Length: 630
Image (cartoon, helix red, strand yellow):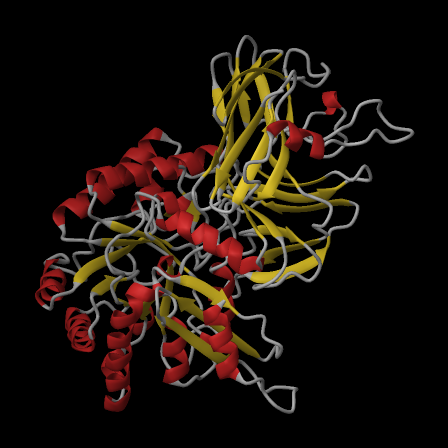
């Protein structure tokens, strides 16, 4: 008997690797201490039911119909020479720690399973065609659920309303989510969670998975009549998109899996510690940002932007980001994408005068780009219409733009060259990297990998430059893109009321320092709501704080309030960006309580979102003290 037992933090993962088939998970959950491996195997044994197969059936790391699995198969595909051949049956060939090697007819499989010190499991597969082509449909990443996990939570949403939670009972059958957007999506599940009935932020036993992938995806929770249940996710491949020739390999994205016996906050705590431990995680204090979009839009005048920069510096801003409108032909959002040259009509001396003033004021300079897109009204499109993804049959435009096919070598080389030239010529410390449309009716596997290569190459050439992942706001939030970027834009909505929910649920996966959160003008650009400055400030404080507002026109009293809030953020950001997130399961749905607890200090917010239906509010001070203590 071979039981591979992995332990990290308060979590144990035990796998039966005795063969002859693929390993199966015996336990994923609470730390098992010094439990005997044979005892673990016996405890995880399953009975043989009447009117069923004569052997017990449980999911392996790649659930196989050949082994009797009747749920979603882990591997879907076929040999083009014999598409009607029976499904593959893998046989285990070797075990090296948490890495497993197996073979089947014409295929070799390597599975990596890791469990870090924070209790986060990482899982991925690498499939290689050995002696014949193999048309790959799907290669899933699957972990089992125990019987008590009877409720499912995931997130959905739309533009300016990202991260909306939804719950349902995990009854018999399959709960399936598919993202066919070419990017992660406003409605991405983010973290698919199953748990005990009524689990909340601070209570219940929960299991969750996240797929670190920025393209199309599938996520599922499944419960079968034989008492088997699973959580899984996979890259969603289009039919015929990927055929492996002999010697070719396909590697899945990483699946991140977490368990907690103290509710959703326990999942977030493990994920936040894991993310903060990455070598690429930002190590310097997150600077106060001013982004120019809602301040000036396309009105790029040096005098106006210089005044804005001077006011920003007086308030304590540390990074000044010039948004859309600086490049050729870009006087509105209908033209110019792809023409990544500074517009000489608007900037006759280039961006140098503005950058020199920004740097002279003690701030770093950032620039907006959207490298994956092209406007049909652009010099690039007129010269190279064949560089558009889906050029043979163009999909409808979205924000007057199409997608540039970065898997095309010439298109890739052009974009890399232009961005490299900008970063070489100008003192740019930060790129706001946008992605303002879904990809329609086109395969995106190669496109997603090309975007990853592009980001990796730029980071290698310009290691000091930070990059934000923005995608119409929060439509590309995942650990695949964040392996190459330094924060995400939480949402295009700076409406603080909407942002309270968006940031609360984005933090299910990400720590606050990775979530861009800005103070907008008194009346929100996206919703038309008018809100007090104190509410807007308190909302942005719990993310990566910034401004998106023409503060040159703000009254003196509000400027003083802004400067005070910026000073408070600078004083608290060490705690906010290292402490543990706490979210109350508040008895009144009209209110939210959340905070961050560090070593001997804490900061909390009580937020009244609407009038309460209850005649009296709970004693908030006692609630906050209780949360901090626990």
